[in-house]
Length: 110
Length: 146
Image (cartoon, rainbow over all chains, first blue to last red; front, side, top):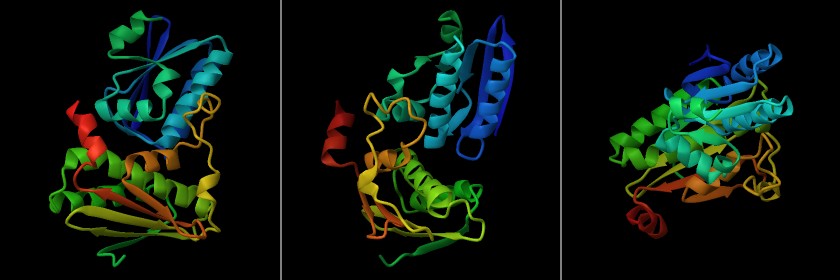
């Protein structure tokens, strides 16, 4: 499980490989907050290679979304598989986040 | 419940994934529809174990979490018990209300109740029993058919 951070123009892209769960949510939080502190304001979290997100993982996304907005930034999510989309829909978090079908669509939405 | 699977886990979050994978494998061996069961059981057991370790046992590494499971012809039953004082499961706010959507926590029990077919707590509130049927319920089957 790991988080890979890349930059494309002024967008910080984080790829989540494996799972986003209670055991590694803090690592994602620290990486995003570090980029926010360094001046990043546009964030895309790509779940193309993510198998599972638990409620703690959902919680950290909510928390990061709030912190990014407080700094005048934007967070987009992309490439949720069917199971992950189901979790966002059940919790109604699909109404809180801007979720794109693909990385390119998300990048174009900034 | 007369369990045919009993796992005594250390109070360590790293133990969750292996325990869940083991239960899923046992359900698969028993002929459960993996696609239907995988998300529901993974969410239910993962959330119950996380709650037990983080809140019930308060991250105390000296404590243990007991998992008892029974794979029956028509359903799988999983009970998760911690050593904590328990909590009132009826006191939890609905995380899907607009006023709660921005709260980082409070979705674990909601997801368990939403995805499992039956959920019960013991009186003390330190043990949760979850039942997942092999076949979808009538309402679920109708929603799939649409």
